[in-house]
Image (cartoon, rainbow, N blue to C red; front, side):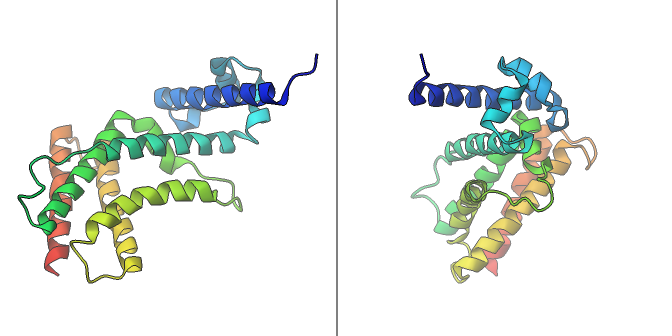
Length: 211
């Protein structure tokens, strides 16, 4: 009896989900460089060739894993709260406190999911193969969160300039987080790294508001 199209789509969807979750698990345990097709197939419980019925190659799978990691990061950032700020502080101060909270939440996620977070930046597509538009849109939503908090601090800036500034601020925080977690700044206890991230964001935000 021939298989129905709906049944085939369901099986492919289930296999795709298993492959993404299995790849995430392998990356978390052993890092991106260790992701190979055979161990992945074994963990996902499928034939080696089945991987390529869902993804064109391992790069395509890693892009899907990156999208999953970005979605988890976005959910983590959306869950942050800044108590006792609304109604008791100026718009500048509210924006500053939220920027600090956002940066610390980013650090916390990177610390808790170090390998999959690092894989977001380690993976390189083959030369000539562009990053898909849907993944660029996922990344842009994270920058938008920073940009929205910059508006009360630098209302005089045009939107394109704020967008550039948001990426610059993210780059500064990301660099500190990366170097701190890699211990390239010397051995730094995690609470101290949190303090330094908060100090950096506070200094930059106050400087922007005063400019």
